[in-house]
Amino acid sequence: MVNAATILCPGNKNIDQLIDQANSLNNKGKSKEALELFQKANDLAKTIGCEKGELDAAKNIMLIYAQDYDYKKALEISNKVRDLAISQKDYKTLSILYNKRAILHENLGLYDVSLKEYETALRYANMISENDEKHYQASLVYYNMAPYYQGRSDEKVVYSLEKSREEILKVSDKSKAVPLDKKVDMLVSVNMNLGIHYRDSRNKGRNVDLSEFYFMEALKQFDLIKEGINLETKIDLYQALQEFYQMKKITGKP
Image 1: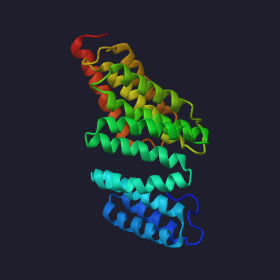
Image 2 (image 1 turned 90 degrees about the vertical axis):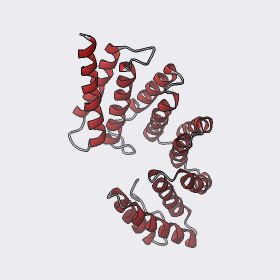
Image 3 (image 1 turned 180 degrees about the horizontal axis):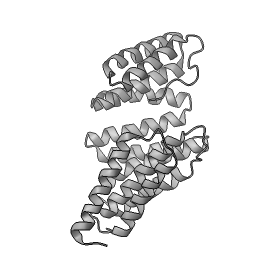
Image 4 (image 1 turned 60 degrees about the horizontal axis):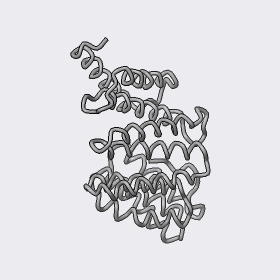
């Protein structure tokens, strides 16, 4: 969740303060307390007619319900978020929203609906005017689409991950819209998942050499930044590498 970098509601700065406090609490794992503050910010923004503040608060309320596994409640709130974002032509929020809706529907077992939501998320991502943000959001959508195709089509898994990689590589290392640590995290994640895909013996296109190539590409990204690397991503990569080299040892691959 993103802190209010600019004043959302010039008529009442308390809204921004409430949102920032709520984000801080949520980052500390205090989602219940954060939810109360986001709701206060939402109510206050609605009272003074500040749609930007209402949108930001509602979006974060939706994300909290999603992270707490209340998928139906999150989807219910997402309808209001969608209406506010459409009225403001906020294509970044719409892309994030539909990406999240796709994941929520997938978690509920509504796979056909999920795919349509991903396609809508991609359409809105491509409408974002800021180039780096556009490529980042598109990369995120393609990345999240890959699990949908697992067990359905190996070719589409690879296509989704390669498109995700292609999009994130278009983001400038000096981008003001997308911090370098976010770009690096995405590059590590997508390269790692390509490595895992080509390592997996269940896939028709299994290729140990390609698997190792993508794992090495993931490792290279750590050279770009010394701080700010997501610890969970780092752990996931080292675990995947350990499994890769264990597989090579067992199978006798050079």
